[in-house]
Image (cartoon, rainbow, N blue to C red):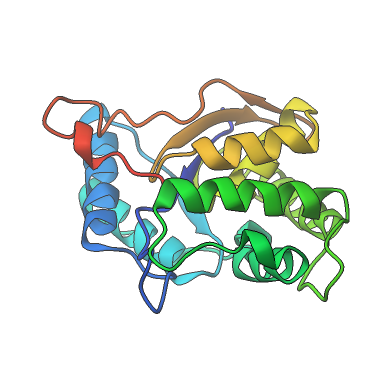
Length: 225
């Protein structure tokens, strides 16, 4: 049976000079997810990732917990996150009166990001951007289609980012752009969305599931950044 798990990377280094690396907790979340798969007897044929550091580090942590010898992770650049730094910078340039103060909370940042994404999704950002919303849609769709064809008949972990995963899920559900934005703001670190697929269709059976963190002892280890 063809099956893939869309896995959001572990907690990244929000607020540091380099967001694109896992925090110590992010490494631990990834390890715990691998241990969960091992405990459940879930074996995977491959782990594929985007080409971001936090994707690779998450895959490595999962492999460590899973006690898997997998080390060669096929890379699909279409699974990369959109450039939210550019999206926000462009939004600030258009709405300087709404700029966030230094030291704003993660919750405030996410509310701000939502406004910027909403404008981006309707081509309302006027400055230069690395990609349009349409470009983002197409590259994610192409990545998922490639995975469907290349890994047909296999069980695969697909390690990506919140925005790309949300776009993929919205496309599978044939949902509007607003759904991408809402899902993006809800997706937990190392959460899994389980999907079954063939070469023509993908079906979702669960979303935003964190069974490896769903205990009293780990309740405070659930993060969104």
